[in-house]
Length: 191
Image (cartoon, rainbow, N blue to C red; front, side, top):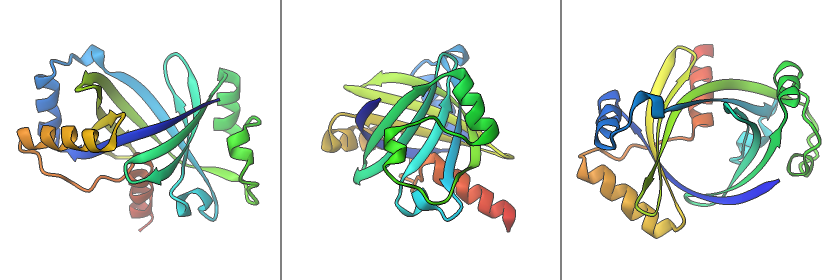
């Protein structure tokens, strides 16, 4: 099991702003990698109510179960375990999870269910002592574009990120995490 503190800043982009960053950072289409996230919660929104995200991420070379919980603004604790392809298939088909300490600590009363999936085409770029991510996400009949910056320091990371947006005249937009955007999209569909 891997436990990390993740310091991240994110901002939604228009398609044109996204394409501008692709051009500025000289990213080719083959530099993007596809990943699919399946998000899980209980019927009574146990994780959502605590600001926690729980997902299965499928990458070309591995599958990861990750629990992300907020520590302070812009800082998340991320617990991740790798699961086999067989475990991945059982999770997707039966919503049955292997024994995972960070999940078992909650003693969930109601079973987990998949609340949706989201596919992201992502590129990672080393930038100013951190990592910049350009994400094009597709869920349902919608898509969005996002820039994310991960840093090892909150103040430094915030300055770098805001300077990047400002230098390209990109307005700061309130940007929910992907799971929250997916949940809002699903709620909109239900009317």
